[in-house]
Image (cartoon, rainbow, N blue to C red; front, side):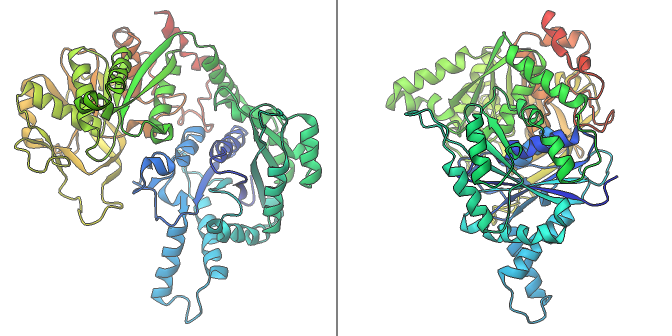
Length: 595
């Protein structure tokens, strides 16, 4: 048993967006596979209190946690890789720290002292990390033994200075054998010479050293494997042993990153450096990661999904949605092709202004095997999404609408099947005569941040013969994460039901419409919640899994067999590892491909 908490700090140099999140998740994964309980903290040096009010073009999607925390998408990576459930305090921002210190000052906790960055802000950071590291994140409510901390941004940024200083002090507070630093750096390879350049890494490490932190491992991000001479050069100029220079080159699938680190002796290094009482060979769990990445490389059959959204220029805007689709595609042994369709390009106005764009967008939509309309905010592009939904409904194309996608499916049906031509959401048309989507009573219009219906809520299935209920394993209710301000107008429910448009899932009070399904359609499903946030590599999210099954033409056979390959076979209760411990054979879902 570990006597004290072990802290692993992951910093980044040269550029932001270098892959610190995936590396932090992978380090946690290989330690968890050795039987340790791992938690993770993400530090974002921006002044926002949380990620809730960001445009997806700023930092990618906003990830939602069980407790309603709106956080950075890296926490989604931690949850997926480590199969843990985090809380909003696992995402620490400059805004949160300053807010807590200012609140203390107003209460008079500092007894007349001058409140300064050092020591007050730096102490608050250290206390937050030590407190949050102890919070259980696994199913069994066990206290974590290792905490992986990712410091966002780049070393040398003005805004991250208080955090670097806090950890400089922290390394002495918790003692050397309980703290180590991984520095992720870029080794560029200019195409003119094809030579790997170490100078950016040298400069970055020098800067980190000057601020009082010495990296224990230097993880080099590069496009091709590091040459030995380059490794030795980094070792010499950055004052570390060659074994402490780890190569993280581009790989075919992010599931390969834990294997890449493990093959370079990272576990053995942590055992010695942090005095970890573990076997140095990670067990079955990593074998499953290998099986998963091998399979994703071998896939031959393709399945295409049109993702109709308004943030399609930046794939991180839909990070969890893409992952949920990938998990589902992998489970049925298909290679996923996501066709990004900007919903505004489907609208008639585009036909007038940019006809080529219009026809290309419709060509993508019509050639896809399934259609997904994810969540979003604001009026731009909503009419295009309604056009796509109309096409999916009429052509009997598999369709999944998430959050706004589900609300627009209600609008589309009301306009075209109930003849309410002006049917709309009050979000987009406050004056509509048929407000089929309305804002919720508890929404506070005065403030934007944290005023939505957020976090894990229960949805009760109202009927036995719902497709989604079967995909979930024929349960009476599900608990999924929400993030919305508007809801389907419950007063108009009966008009839809009479026409075969069913609200099969509702909240506990029966006032909120949570799940829609349409009669006489292979797969037309809408959910008010965001199922992508709880999708895991080895247990895909049922609504997405259903979409992929339907798109690949496998859904009827799968339901007929009683959903025997239920992807929701939870593994957390069978083992403490982050993947099912029941041998790799269990994971071979490929039998579904021989139907």
